[in-house]
Length: 241
Image 1 (spheres, rainbow, N blue to C red):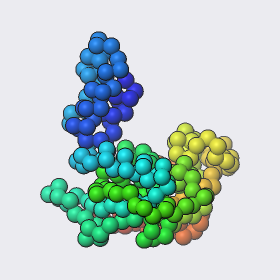
Image 2: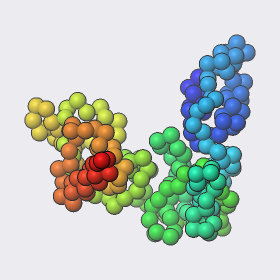
Image 3: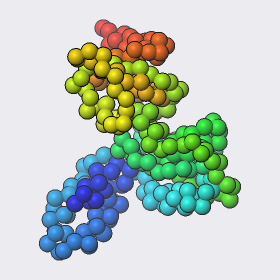
């Protein structure tokens, strides 16, 4: 039931592939349990990926990770007419993949991106013509996929900063969910606590803070705090009539 739920809710698996996978999962149960599973798991009318090649993409990326090889692929977005628009005019991307990672309902390949000479990530359902290269993977011995996920928000990248944040005590579980329970918490007073964490500063990070409202505040660095205020002002100005 847990596996079938995960398959049904995964946005990166198309509706047709989800249905096929759930059928296969059901074969490991009794006939009665399989009928219950099919009846209780709903996949219709969910938001799903359109790219049917995701299975092959995952296979090739896994192969490259195992063999410590680079991959090449095309990367695309969809326009308003649901047509593919290839980035960089269809030129191939080169990535040394370190891990596959599921975050914010999407599936990503994380690795060393040659063009920008840094760690980056790509949505697997937006990748096409994935091929394994004969070139050896560019290694980064310090890479930690869990640490990478903690400092990014909605998988938006940005300049990494050590940010000091203040929260009201009722948000402690929100903080544990995002940063883990091994984070250092400093009590400010009876109503507030402070954390200092590495953050990939981006509009998604600011958006995460916006949803917490006046219960969250940036204490520093000053330029990160000012960036948050500027973002708030832009949104406020956009909604003036």
